[in-house]
Amino acid sequence: MNIGDIFKVDYVDEGIGLMKDARNLVVDSDTAWCQEIAVLVFVRRGYLKLRIDGEPMTVSNHQMLLCRPGRIISALQFSDDFQGHAVFLTVRFSHSIMATAGNIWNYVLSIDKHPIFDMTEQLKPLLLSYYRLLLDEVAHKNNMFYREVVSSLLRCMLCSMISDMRQLPLALPRKPVVDENYQSTQGLALFTRFVDILTNEQCTERQLSYYAGRLCVTPKYLSMVCKRMSGRTAHQWIKETISNSIYNYLKFSDKTVKEISYIFRFPNLGFFSRYVKENLGKRPTEFRKE
Image (cartoon, rainbow, N blue to C red; front, side, top):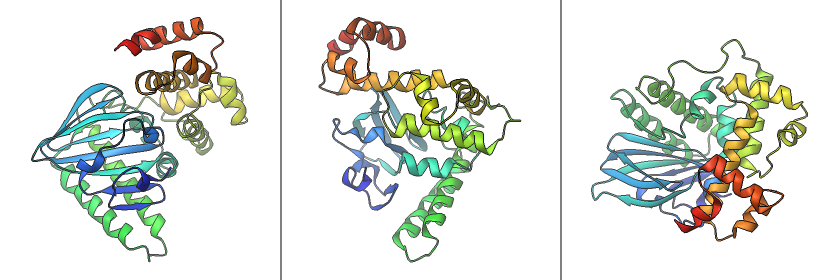
């Protein structure tokens, strides 16, 4: 997916887009960009009101929003004095950035419940400096190490953000849930590929054996690696990803409940209805009535 075809970005390159004025973030709610693109918004003045998967949120002065791929942003409203910037990353590009970042995965993948963070006094000028450097770098592609420089700047920016988040109460766990003694490069690579399949390919398969087969490992081994790298089993990752995808189909698509059930390979509507009720708290028809 080409970021420049969806957003009015000021600079775009393969896998990355930069937007000087985040008020241009408005998109058609029917566009499926959210399935493949991560969004970072930095508010320097005023506020931004929006919905993420239907839940209302407000990003205020000196706060940042991190929205992972697979979530739908809608109903954006900006204050008259709003000033903010946005960074867009495709799933594949963001994974390439994070692949060598070790336990940083544990914190990046914890943003779903707390996607809005306060920027400390130390972080605000640092993020602005990174952003300006990115603008300068993407505007001049004559550097033979252009891609390496951009990736390094983004990795540094994300590491600085996550380091700052860990100091905030209720933001992210102070103690990583991953096994600190498990630093296997192969394990991290396997976990990264697993998450890549889940998020980048918009998978609808609910069976762990499918993903283990794709990755040429046993289901037991894949689940063990996921648990050690993220504190969550592969089953938990699959269930959450599939549930989020079903929610987005029910809330934001014009497909019938029967069609959605077919997409996710449920044997019948009754089974699909029970699955949705168990994992999302309501039956499919109840979502359609809202």
